[in-house]
Image (spheres, rainbow over the protein chains, first blue to last red):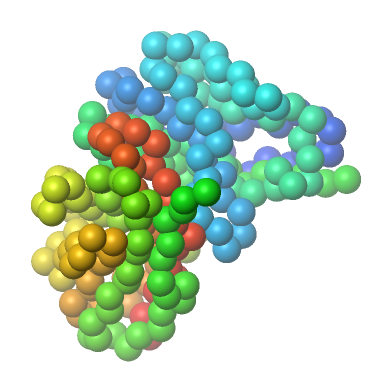
Length: 110
Length: 113
């Protein structure tokens, strides 16, 4: 069945890069997404990548996709305290539903 | 900037009671979704809705759940007889077209006592 896995926690120093990893199982996913959830808030789409791409860069965010290994990563350059949140990887099923990972809690300390 | 809104932000109910969670999707969107997140767990798909019909539903979405678009703006999730395990954050989402970005609301926290 469809499954998306992430590590639960990541702690980085302000100014360093953060790399959040995700593995998924459904090779038919068309898009893969990264969502950010701040405390008490909804899910904010950060970026997404089409399944036929290897990399996408958007300002401080870089998404890498290894389709062979079904591995997705999100790199945040120059991580700031405002980046502290839970980051969810999600894949789109052949239907429209999103399948989310467990979420990675990113803590940025000064 | 248009956004998805949800009311109430927090609902407390007794086990066995009916609850209705309300969502106002973005006005020109045609596809609507409900997801839920039990505390500390993954966000899980419940149901998708298009053209006044359910497009897809998960195993979680059993007979005690129903969705409705009662007018041109609201999209509701009804739980007929709540159970303790229904306690979760419920997120509504909408998208303009199939496969487009889904915009999420802030969620309704449902607590069943």
